[in-house]
Length: 415
Image (cartoon, rainbow, N blue to C red; front, side, top):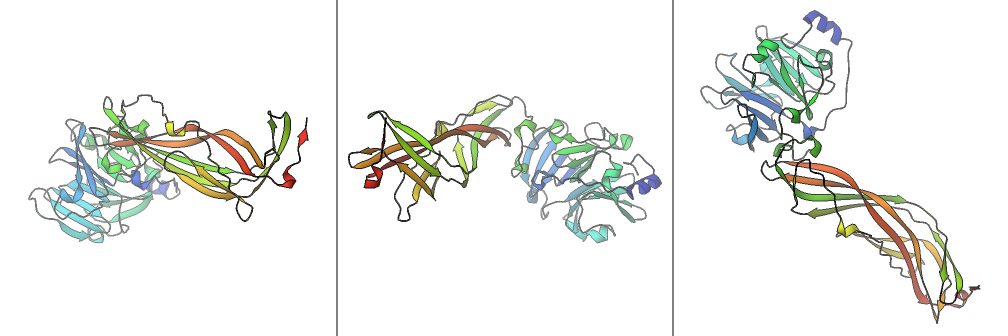
C-alpha cells in the first residue's frame, strides 16, 4: 500500500473500530477531479462542465474552457480521472457516474465507454476520486477508501479514510499524485499525493493537516470554475493585480415589538400636550440592494464602504384614516425597495390649531446594523471573490396627525 504508513494487517484492524464523520464541505466549492498530464505537463482541474489548465513549468493558471471541448464526446460532470500506461498504452480514464470513459492518449482515438462494474467489481455506484500507485488503485467515495490490485483485480473495502490519513475528517473530492513540479519520481520516492477536500488539500505523508488550496494554486478558487461558490476575498492571493468593484448586496432583517408613550411640548401657547401612543409594532423585513460601480483597488487594500442612499435614512410614515380605524404606513428604504403595511395602534394628540388637530410625534430613532457583501471582479484573471461587513443605518420613526378636530379632542392641560 504505497500511500499508507502502516501495514495492511494493522490498517484493517484499526479501521474496523473507527467511524469518524465530519461536516461535508459546500459542493459548490469542491473540485470535481484533477488530472496531471505527462503529455502536456499541465494540471487540469475539473468542475461541473468547465476545466482550468495549470502549467507546471510556469506554475500558473493560463486557460479556462468547457470540458466538452477538451475531448470530442466527453461527458460531464467528471467525478474522477487518472492517466496511466498500465494497460500497455498511455490512457486517460474519466469516471462519470457508473461509467468509465477511456481515451487513448497515444493514438488519439475516440472515447470508449465501459461500466464502472466492468472496470472494478465491488465499488459503489460512483466514485469521487482515484489514484494509482505501485500496482494498486485507490478509490475514494464519501468518507471511505477502497483498494484494488491490478493483478488480482479484487476490491477491498470500504475503509474509513480518516483512519489512514490522520487529520482528514472530510470527504475526498479529487486526488492527484505528486509527480509534478518536484520531478516525476517524487511520488514514487516519497509516496505522496494531493487529496482535495472542499477549499483545502491534504498532502499525504506530510503534516497530517488540511491546507488552503490558495496556498499552493493561487487564484484557482477565484476562477470561473467556482462562480457559484462563496469565495472569501481573504483566501484569494493573486498579489499585485487590480481588482474591480463589481456590486454590493445589502441584506436587511428586522423583527421588533414595542409600546411607546411619549409627551411633547407646545412652545407656542406654553402648554403641555399629552400624546398617548399605544404602538404595537411587529414585523419582519428582508431587503436586498444592488449597486454597481467601477472602483479599482489593489488586493489587500483597506477600503471604507460608503452608502449615500442610506445616510440618515428615515421611515417615511404617512398616516391615513382607514375604515377599520387602523393606520396605513408606507416604508421606503434606500434603493428601489419599498414596503407597505397596516399596523394597529392608538394615537391621541390633543393639540388643536383652529378647527384641526395637528401634531408631529417622533416615535423613535435608532441605528441598525445591516450586513453587506461586496463582489470584486479581477480585471485580468477572470476571477471573482466576495468580502463581507456590516454598516450602520439610522432609522427614525415619525408620526404625523393633521385632521379635523372633534369635541372630544379639545381637552388640554394648561400650565
